[in-house]
Image (cartoon, rainbow over all chains, first blue to last red; front, side, top):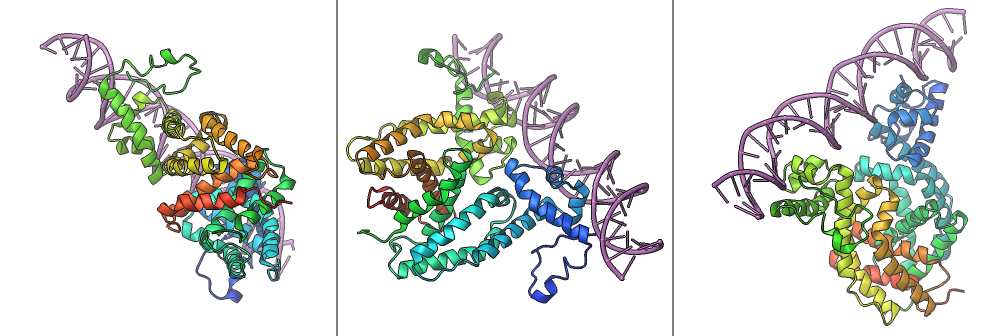
Length: 210
Length: 210
DNA sequence: CCGAAGTCAAGCATCGGTGTACGACTTCTA
DNA sequence: TAGAAGTCGTACACCGATGCTTGACTTCGG
């Protein structure tokens, strides 16, 4: 039987990691991938989608899904982890040196696109998973952004009269706001990235903050 | 039997309105009030609180609650409507003339406090009520804020290179972000209003926006 | 090509929440 | 103070979702 351990256990050693997903049949891996890919879509259509619904969306039997993920929570967890891993793969390539403002913008654009895709999963995860777990998965992305903001503050490019945590929160929320405005039809998708950047730029710039 | 019509129907005439809640016994009204007051608390503790749980929180039997609100949705609706009415009573008194920037700040502070209290109800409502209904209840508050932002743009105080809808969305989301940061313990409650105002001030100010 | 791995339909026990019905009881109000 | 109005425990039907089991089937891989 397939097992969907994903990134669950307290796995420390990298070489052993593949012992989990490795020796399973090709079609099993394919199905697992199909499920992982279909879950965000299903949740975007209906945040309360049932396991049966998600399986259907993936073109897979419900029992097959349960074969890969013992419980609904595990499915959500694995899906979020997977999505975040993919995101990480993209974001890790963004160059962060040079002007913090520029780097920030370079980071926002892809982040925004990724977020729009993952958002639904994130929302569901927020009410079904433990906050600690979610934070843990965000670790890398968050650290990168925080580091950039801190450097920006040190170099006097970003305002330093507000805590970094707040800047971080505003960044996240602004992207979320944009996603919402887009789905609500009040904002053009292709214009969203620009709007976000423009907004944050003037909100974060180190200017005449008494 | 009590009936919890609240602000449901298409009630047009004001004088007739009281025909609903008026001729009911004093303790019935009291209970209704208790429920309406307890619901936000219950939902803040647990967004998925059951009707039974809410009744318990209100110190009232489940059946009593059902006597006032035929269905869970009706309860949420009435609660939100009530909370929003109270909010409206406060916000309507805020003077909006004079400098838009000043007026904006004067509006943010109380809005923020109210939002923090209502937030939980709002979140639940967003996933159980029709969006149209929620918008309808927000009408007045939203119109007031929008009017102010528009005036600010006309008078050159607020930037005009971004749509008012977006400014509005950012305002809401920033307050929400603050609420979240406060409950997460990353932001001091007493400092929140200032942080919000400072953030929005520089984000919205009409400056050197090429 | 055979055996193991995986799929998946159907069916079922379970759980928790909603909404209803009844009826005895308490508390207002006139 | 009588009777109407309202409370509220108990009990129940219902619903949808989860997670498990079985067993026949298909597909892969050596």
